[in-house]
Image (tube, rainbow, N blue to C red; front, side, top):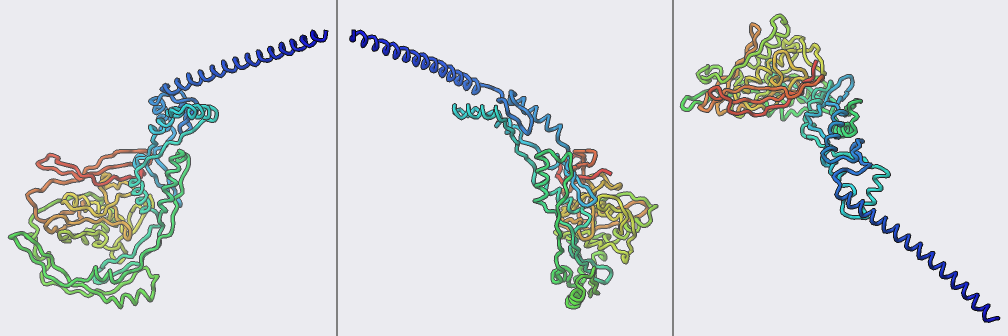
Amino acid sequence: MPKFEIFKGNSQKVLKNFRHDNVFLVFFILFAIVLGIFIAGCIAFYTNQQNSNVIQSGVYIKGINVSGLTKEEAIEVVQKELSYQMNDHIELIYKNYNYYVEIEQIEAKFDIESSVEYAYNIAKSGNFFKDVKDYITVLMTHVNIEPKLIYNDEALMSYLQIIEANLPDQLQQYGYYIEDDELIITNGVNGAGIKYDELKELILEAIQDISYSRSYIQIPTYVQYPDPIDLETVHNEIYRQAEDAYFTTEPYAVFADVTGIDFNVEEMQAKIDENPEAEEYTIELDYTEPNVTVNDLGKEAFPDLLASYSTNYATSNKDRTTNLRLAAEKINGTVVMPGEIFSYNAVVGKRTIAAGYKEAAIYQDGEVTSGLGGGICQISTTLYNAAIAANMEIESRRNHMFVPSYSEPGKDATVVWGSTDFKFKNRREYPVKIEASVSDGVANVSFYGLKTDDEYELSIESRIIKSTSTSLVVESYRVYKKDGEIVKRDKLYTDTYKKQ
């Protein structure tokens, strides 16, 4: 009896252990099956993801959903949406004046292709665990890719410099000119300078977040101070010894006369020291006249007409006509030697009441107003076209803010005393003589010199490359013709005009 009880107890224990082992085995088998299915599913997903030709779910480019799109479809969708959202210009504000930066002119665009390529390769690196993790993360939290902004920094800087030159309170460096027998030195004037780096950053940030179509950018500026008057430099530039003019015919060569000129540096320095804030300083010049001048040589020294250009003006505006005539008279008879640079402001001088200039319409601060010497930009424009036709090398030239009535866009040259000059260099091997006249509604400038065997017929050709509601963008070229056929074109400028 006792032995049976022992056997019975052991039997129950074995049965209990057998059942426990079977439950564990079943659980293990089920876990293995589930794990196998999960791994197989992951492998199948991974294989499918690696071979997929579309972007995974949860991916955005600049806020635009590109999930499930091929690369080509994503590029098209993003380009179309950004084109719809982006404006064609950025509006800048300074005081009560506005200026525009054209997006196309600075070649600003987003690198959409690279962004799409990056989006397409998400969870496709070839690393199983990393790709699965990236896929789940992007699916759950989403990712927004900011495309890189590409732009032409040189074009942007050039345009900002034009804006700075048209600010209402421009910096004026000291300058000098000769009026009759006097040297007049004008003091510099403080002006506003653009903080280029800061403004560039504001512009690029505005384009990046596409906010510029709905807001303005205030132009950040600082105070620019003019250079102090350097009398030694002025004296070195003015001082000349008297020399007689002469020319030869075998070979043809002109040697221009030089009028001796000098002034008392110590006396002028004393005037500056006495009143350093004065607007201008005047001192009498000492001249020594040559016995023979270039004008005495006559047309024989300049036998050929190289180029001529004319513009029309309204004779009814007598004050403006007076200004044109005064500027033309200053230029008339000027001889520019080979390699010499002609400066419009230096030759014409400051436009003052004492010099006889009158009030007439001018472009200032982005609008038409009345100003002393108004209209003389027509002479600089006429001179510019004639200089191009005479094969001069343009050293400095800037277009007006608006297209002037006397010129086609791309063919004008504005001048402002103290800040904007028109300059050209005589790159011919022979001197040129300029004749300028204003009469009966026609302003004319002609260049005389000596023609060579390889002369071309030269002119300015301009074309509008973009027109918006606010501006006009124009490209200009120097066109070379031989026997009436165009031989080549040289790019001159890309100009932007504000529409009135």
